[in-house]
Image 1 (cartoon, rainbow, N blue to C red):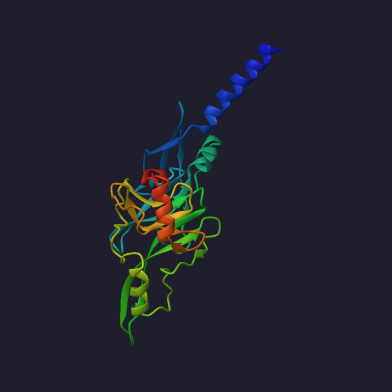
Image 2: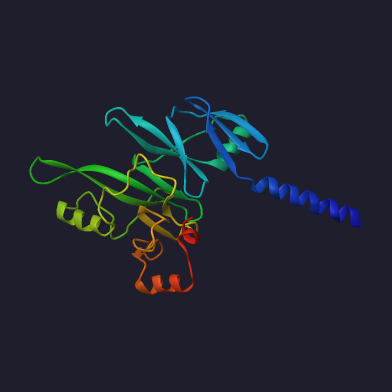
Length: 240
């Protein structure tokens, strides 16, 4: 009886270890991904061509890069949950890459927070027939792609003046390079409860500046900052 219990525990631990192993990915060709989990590797074909990909901050998703010939720039418009890709690949099925409905350039995704952050570019009227280009950050729900409105959220009817006021809340529109996001740049916290819209590096001493609470949709207060510092919370604890 004892031997059976021990065997059961060992099997459970082995299963748990296998289940918890991180899935890694590599590109084999224009449409082929190789997914590795533990010692096992699977090779699958995606439904569309892609240039490259990068991991989300929590490493639960792949963000796929497509080259926009008209704009002559790479855009991260598609995403894929790694666990879903592995399951489909295990069934010898083609991998489906999800596309961001509005065509927004995806900056980061959080499984824990069920949100993703995008970098939007559009044209708006500045009087008469004159148009001007603007860029801004949007936060959306992962399951519905519905935008979560923050004080920095830009609407199509916003004037140039109101747009600039909103962008000033997060430090301006062009601080983050949407085409080349360094691995050390963090946008969504590990628990999905906080965001830094334009990204932050944990190398910065005052990392808590520019952090927004997703639930309250406000920047964290001086009191919250004080609590963090008093508790000895480091950037790596929140975003690393």
